[in-house]
Image (cartoon, rainbow, N blue to C red; front, side, top):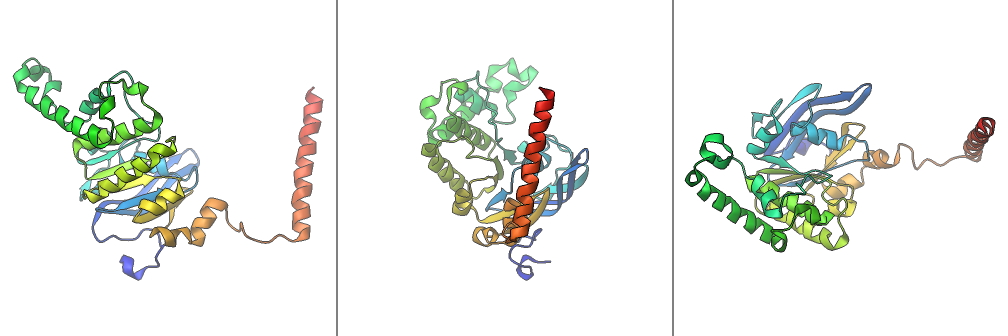
Length: 299
């Protein structure tokens, strides 16, 4: 069904120009169904936020789409090409890259060395050609120039020769984002880009995410900062208990009862009668007394 004929926040909407499409993606851990996504699409050239309470399955879904984990069932395509079972490094080469909630910079390498590692197809990494410097020297110069331009853009050029381990949490996030651009990706997936970032760097990161869209790139990000979601998102997708429960423009999604229930629990606004409230208090007191009695017996 076309998006125009659905309610604004109906999950699984079809997009006009989808760059990523996933169907029936399921991942279980024992008896827990961590991801259970029937249909999911990302529109090209837009910023899409993936939100939901802790444990909703957002990062696991990221891991599945980028090849860092394998689903029980499901299939997905990027630019119409299947990515099911494709290794993470091959996913990146196809133009779909990601960052991590806990940054993956190489602490004992310098900032510029971290950047060079982000480039793909380096001839100097092959055993035979590595012996002959003329075969890879020009390419390395080109990669270094691109890396330096990106460091300047992300205001990390002054840290060029510092060890990556000396950077602050926010600077590491910037470095990881800059390194992701070394492959000139079409789709960038950011896992909680604001986590652990001080307020001074948050606005800088926000600006950089917006600039990615201005360049024509597609952005999908996981985030808990609702102010950020409202500020930069074109579209919001909500996960709860592994499923997509709503999606739509930010303001419409934030007002959706399904979204409120996902974050606060169903019937969170139901008024309690005096009898119900007294019963809850009595049960809580009984649990506390039982714990005290058990502690006394053990002592």
